[in-house]
Length: 369
Image 1 (tube, rainbow, N blue to C red):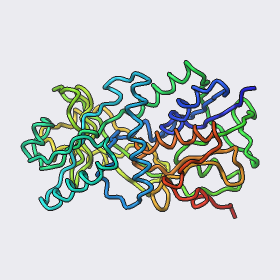
Image 2: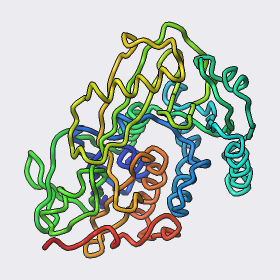
Image 3: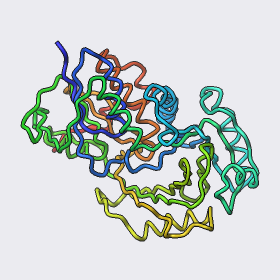
Image 4: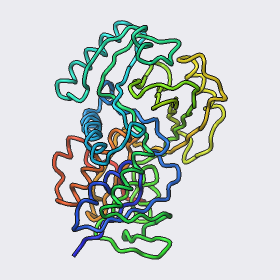
């Protein structure tokens, strides 16, 4: 008899989990999505964790593993360059000493992460040669393994692929009862395993069960510009010092952003002031940009925890309910590995090496008063 696995949330974690589970003929897989404020749909799309100076080693191991999964998934689903492209990343530094330290860090980390690829120290002129859009380039370090991904298209492609195998999709809001009952607009739905991949909305979803999740919403905004010129598929992503990230997507789309706004709650309103700030950051890199080139402002809500680390796995008192949250601004990087680990757990019941990637899940869950 097939087991019923239900996933709530179709962002990066939900989509990757569904992708892996849909290959298992012993499972019926269903996914529900409300689709409001999803971080995956409104993300900048940089996959390049290796030069991060975050001290959390568990986060780095998770991000490194997530980045390594992309080529395998992209090849399986046959996604094009407009979805994912390993065009490299350039990280700039003002100070030559800082640049040398960054180059040294990349060289050290390549020993355990060959996915970094080639490493080059570039002059300002060489940076401009790689990214012709720039009018004020600075020296930087280039790593060929860095990539850009359109999170919205990536998740969409995964779900369409999973539907062809063994996935049923539903739109609409769901809630939980005090015993973890799944309540939908069509009434209570049965499940054998429930996976809550709802990002910043995990806290209100779990409250009826008397569980308080250490999850806070973080607002993120970015701008997309449609430029008159076009470029090839091999233009790298730029992570400049002191400015917003600068992501040239295939052909003529440029993304600048995103912000990290911790005190805005679940606000999804576009801010003209933030738009101006993002545009000003873009102009510092390319002085030819004009405001009428802004084609879209995107706003999403990320989930973050008090230590800015993600968590995932079964609830301590209910192993049939799995949760994942707290991915923050690196969700597109850590999300694939979290989705794969959750899918493996559903199929095997094992949490192999999970302590490499996170603190105990009880760190982030508490009983309601």
